[in-house]
Length: 428
Ligand code: SDX
Image (tube, rainbow, N blue to C red; front, side, top):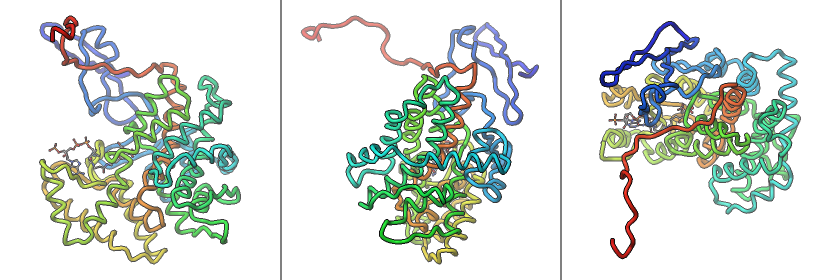
């Protein structure tokens, strides 16, 4: 709390509210007693001016294009860390020692297998089911298999559930892909890294040997790091709201997956690559930029713009560099990257995008990398969900262990009919 106070005058009445300061970033006005004192609600659809919670996990400065995880800049983590180490950092608050990291990785590795009956669950889906539909269903179904880690009041059960979710998401995602292409499921290989194991479960077949390419493993691991957590975004807020009712962690993460699926959020990586392929050549870019600017055209540049970043998304910077590395390593000659680079260049020169501070976001380049590695566009958001699971789980743990935690229940501005009496049908 700070000494600052916020004054509010409604008609002839004046009110005062405390102002809270974080370790950095904007102050917040503590309006928890506003309704009790004034009889009025605040009105903030989309929560553009609302802080929903206290958190020490991730800090974003949208104007400066800064993203910190427990204080460490995303660029440094992407360059020097690993997804397992970033997962440990998000869950525990500090970078691990070598022994702590080895123990954590060993724990996660030993939770990568799914209950064998869950593989039957996939067979209920059509082969052409969208992988995100499968992810929603299978992750929600985990609560039917792991009763020993659904008591959220028990810190040990919360920890086991957290480890199970982080460990099993690669297996679940890889199985969704295998099912969609009619290939057999590949069991986890505990001799591989978290990310190497995921690549093998996804791209290997029992009939042939498979070797994880280091360049691809590094790029994939970096993409997981870039998607790990991102403050109170829509899907994380969904997980927190679901968790605030006391729902079990598997159900909460399934809710987060459902929210992430939307094209305005995690579905943008799939939508962006589809857009780049539709544009096809640099010559066609101006037409699409004009469409994006046209108020009467619902078309938007997918992978562009962000609720918080009014500067370059620092994750997009790392992603663009990674595209070059993967294309060189795999000797990829896909014009999609040139289209993306030219689109970014022309958009950032355009007054419409400059005035609205619209820049490439995390989804703008990720699709080019994932496509080069061999993933179909339908798997892109499933990969986002795989990586974001550690952020959702860390945010959920932070909320559940907060002694002041209460169920989330917003109010409304009611604009419907005031009370009226029922009219019998023969009098209408
Ligand atoms: C993610 O929250 C997170 O942190 C999310 C995320 C995470 O890691 O969890 O970062 C991941 O979801 C990234 C965003 C992925 N989505 C897209 O790339 C879809 C395209 N972008 C837009 O739909 C939009 O930019 C949003 C949804 C991302 C943000 O929308 P806002 O904050 O509600 O802003 P807005 O829609 O009010 O846009 C402000 C103005 C509008 O024009 P006006 O009404 O003021 O005239 O900018 C325009 C919009 O029309 N605009 C765009 C645009 N994005 C915004 N115009 C053209 N193309 C775009 N992409």
